[in-house]
Image (tube, rainbow, N blue to C red; front, side, top):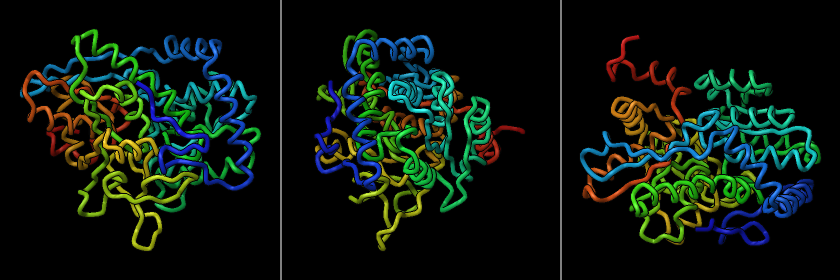
Length: 400
């Protein structure tokens, strides 16, 4: 039950690494060295788990969703939506902020798409007394305005990105450029298992708490392991967190669900594992969506947190080895799953998580009743309500 491990240069097979300007080589090596030194100490573990339990609210529950399981396999939800700040993001944000504090950093910066990482890192920065700046595309701020307000309330500076397509990829670029200016005093708390080494490894390690808990809880509730473990995939942090608990359990099939947008055939999607090709961007090698000219492709997803043109190197390796399978769900399917879970279980999921729910619903109907599907419900959907009501209220019979 171990995560894919990077080699000393930060590669997972042929993916990963650190393709950065010379000025960042030493700061990144310092982060990697410090993390290796302190992350396995009893002091660091005890402090982190104190905050996981008493601040974030871990362990998050495992819930049998009986109502949506009525027509097929049993669906279980790992309730990361119940964490403080509303998503799985708090797991690695607490770890990154604690690491920054131990390293004597004065400021923490981050990018965010849907805003869940932004809120989580703003909260963690406040907790550990760090200054915080968060980069967010203008379009994402407009779509997720309540989350932008929460970040500001927590004391963070929210910097609107007006360049490019004003989305998550542009926010990553801007945050990375800011980090270049003062890496000695700034910690870049990247929001997923992306970016140059050691960030994919660090974020993956912190998210592995999800898989450890889920495996133990599933065995306790069912006396067996799940037949399928399903999670949405943008950069890939919540999925690698869940998958980490079952990597050595061959009886559990791992399925990542990418944002299919308007359909893979349309080109209006953000499904790098299904339609990308190897390239180097944002400091690491992975599968990215690029045009025929080799430039970054336009991406689209109804879920801002999945609207990224690449994916973490661990997932690239898991696809290459066949240990995990990667599918996609469209915007329409995700929105329909959003309402299905809301109205049948009384749980409003994030649009990101709704992609995983959508695939689990389809899968469940094809399987016998004695099969089980574990879904990482990575976040809650109150952040998406304004957008949902503005665009889908009439279709789903909501009067506003």
